[in-house]
Image (cartoon, rainbow, N blue to C red; front, top):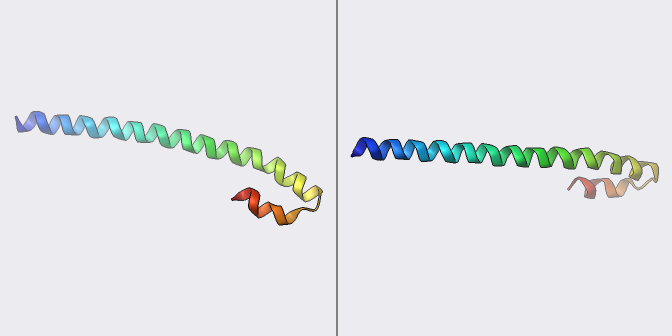
Length: 59
């Protein structure tokens, strides 16, 4: 019936929305880990007066 099809569609959307939120959470966690690990590297570059490499590290 139309109602069953509608309910299936809503369920499909909810499941995929949850999956996308999970993927986003993993991506955000990876981004935070990268930033956390970039900061000590930037400090080392500053110590060694290699500021020209700072922009490359951020990209």
